[in-house]
Image (tube, rainbow, N blue to C red; front, side):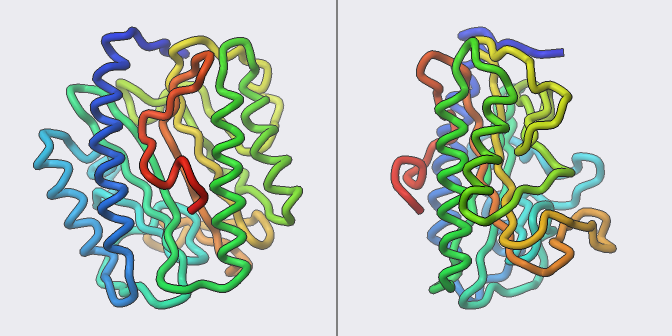
Length: 255
């Protein structure tokens, strides 16, 4: 069932999005060689709780942490640990926050120090795919228009998208209808977008082939060919001028 939000609900989600944006900016400054992924997670949880919010991921279907921290060939759902970040890697951080009963969801991929040309391009293309998709989130467009925008742009630059995982609606629940694939399958593609739908749009892009598997921890999704992956996500309100609730300083200029 598609849940269209009221102005009152959107105002709460805007407040939640502002908290999210502040957190994303702080995490960006923390991503450096030698930092443990569990340190990022601990900081994020303390920050979220200090704002009167609740981590949306922790405990969700048994997930053990506040952040998903996925390094290099890990696409999504990486569990924070004592693992240290190293120069030349890229790291995707995904976070969800509940505030006054409503959720926003966002992800960014950051460089750890200087990275090679392939990883730079991968981040840039994934970021730009999200920006192009956001512009399509207007009333009257079809859901498949978002998916097609992402897929065509990514493929035109020689990369590919993961098929098994998708974007989604978000609001009272972390995951609401509709699913938002990053390619165009038959399901949902003709769904008309309505004003005040709230969508978590999230390109998950790989430098190699789109085949992935889940590690033995039952969470971390990894590319089968060990090629790097990037992930950007924002919570967006469908409107004549789409509103990005989780926008931070990276959203208005290339990362």
